[in-house]
Length: 305
Image (cartoon, rainbow, N blue to C red; front, side, top):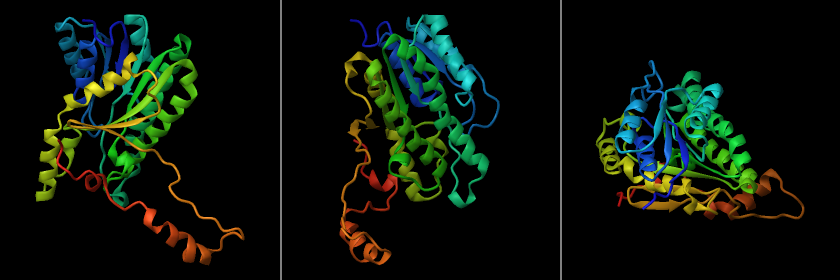
């Protein structure tokens, strides 16, 4: 039986390891030709890159009878993003899907965060998602079809301590995805986000000094990367026609649909508002609807199922 991506070509960034690797492998098993992009650097973006992780995934795909080509460039470079798209066209004749998965972590408390910590995370996650998406956009418009899947995070959707750079980038990706979905719907191009919970090299950099931190890491180890891939491959496929502009979460065997910011309550005062009136009337009226100050680990505290 033909796979759901039979005849399609997809580009998966950061797919030499972890979640991206599982997405690339499943996409190939479902019939897609895959451009496997991975810089091959360390989890924090330091050190010289290597093509080895991408080449290993390509070898696995080819061993199973699939088609794939490796790319070892950085998504933070717009010219490199253009070459990733060109690799799909030169090797397979077209491009049908993009998965923006590449990422690094530079976790610091905000008051200790350096400009380098901030900029490098923004460059890879947010700028990288823009670069690769923009590089594919013209071709998607010309062929009047295409699908984007962007990896966001509960750190951006809810918030996390010590990850202001990562949270900002991941919430920014939601904005990119939504704009693409709105602007390119008339070209039959879809754009969605997936928030993955999965054990990976990036999660492996989290601290494990306290008992609570150790328990948290043990929960993450239960959430394997292969659990994320089916949702992403579904969104790349024609089975997802009509599904666009959405944010999904995958947490072990759970699939979530996230809400998106909309007004939840409003107050009106015909004579206008003063500072005192806001304090006396507006905020007390809204108090029951204020969002609690909680991190992602508190918002999703139950054991993965």
